[in-house]
Amino acid sequence: MWVSNVREADGIVRMDVAFRNSSAATHASPEDLQLVDASKQTSPAIQDVAGCTHWSRTEFSNGAELGPLTICFRPQSTASPLTLRWTPDLGLICCEATLKIR
Image (cartoon, rainbow, N blue to C red; front, top):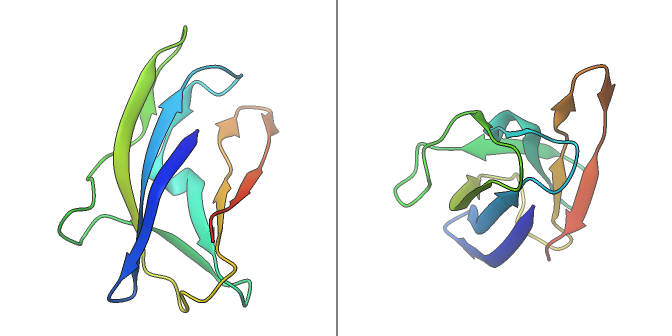
């Protein structure tokens, strides 16, 4: 997962996210992404705001790519730090990746 162009306006945090199958993960899903704010409150990805990509779980493999997609969140607070949490479902095992974005 690659994240770029993080920006905030009117309480909405937007970022461009691209996925490439270079790990055991074989799908990407908006349900697997959360934004964690400075108070450790989590916010799910939203798709009901203009300019935010509407997407659903997408299967890919063998180096396939998805995106970039404009992923949006409506956190309780946009104060730093903000962390993107990705928890892809890998079947019997699960993992978590976090990325401080601001």
